[in-house]
Length: 497
Image 1: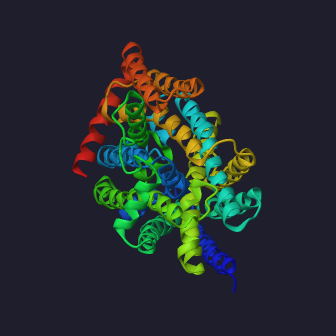
Image 2: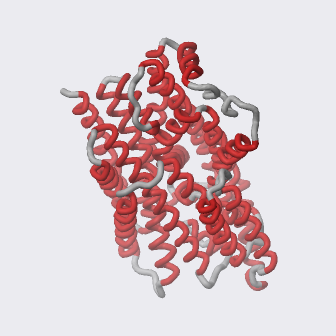
């Protein structure tokens, strides 16, 4: 049996397991709320691993190790910023959003929560936020499709489009039928696979190099400053800008719909505490493994002279060179898990934006649950097809596509979500203006092409404009008592949790 046959067998087992979980979830999805939010019955462990796996995407196994391989530890500031942002998100946003989304007319999507929280009778808030979700998730889902195509092309020598279609088709099947529960349960398995792979591969590579001392010497030999958090030089303006931009990734957590929707699905606000501990633990292990994988991969390539055509495939190359073909196949499946876990979550959020928010805001009446369920599945299919078409001819790296979409969500939704949860005076017009300001700033800053990560000016603009406009155009006087009562009730429920 050839090495490739072993690897393909491992990936086939993985695909079959994902489809089986999707079928299990399909049998337990009875209506539209089940499909979109698992009936708010998601346990802590599932929410923690699901949020982590859907967060990290293909960049954890490919993009981040590749960046570390090329530039060294200075790129690890992204991991530092993400860890801080994720902790703050679980600590402050998760219990409050779980409580508030239920108190505020049982909201099951981020746009519907904002619309209900701010008493937006015009429905403009749901329409605009739903449109923003579709715009940025188009880039995000496309990055997953690109990662799938690159994976199969570099690993098995298949065509890029073939690999993209295979990954997209399997992800589509278990997501379209299993819904939110299917995406969350597959995320749990995928998250565990990613973590194990990110521990095993670097450890085996260090052993192959002769030990930690030899590995560190090889990294230092590969280039000056690879083991320095400041690129081995005095802190120049450019270095400080790079570090600030990397740490600023943490700001994005507050506005990622596919992550914070897990908070809304928790069994109760109290479940956020154990979920936070499990989620941050998983994240610390996984990010450390990804950073170590990039550095150790550099040492291995430098020492052995192994060929590596694309730095973003360094983890794939190490697994194929160092492990039995069957075990290497499961590591390759873990890379697929990183890709597919995020794509599935994003497809569900896109579907909810189309059905629950855009259609729900524009339609005169609400169809039966069965019709909404079918519409949700149809929208998952449509978004997947559009994303695949956009990914056929990729023009950017995986990390580049992810960073733009991450900035877009962080700047458009992050300030508004925080203000909606913790500031009583946020108004509909303030939220609308803040979202638009954040979105426009991200696009403009990206087009300008400076070294400062666009999430920083975008987040600042969204926050400032939302506050100013809310003070100038507050909520209507007849709505204030109801909003005040609801805000107090949600705050109390979150504290008791």
